[in-house]
Image (cartoon, rainbow, N blue to C red):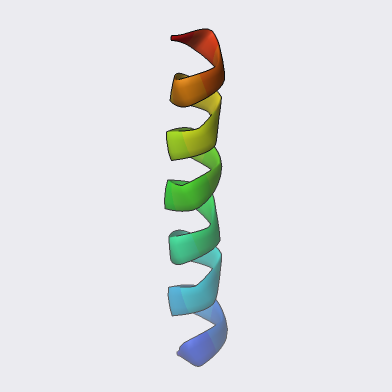
Length: 23
């Protein structure tokens, strides 16, 4: 369960940074 939560958190962070880069 912890691994799943970490994967989701990492995905959210990745999406956040991607949107920031795209402006």
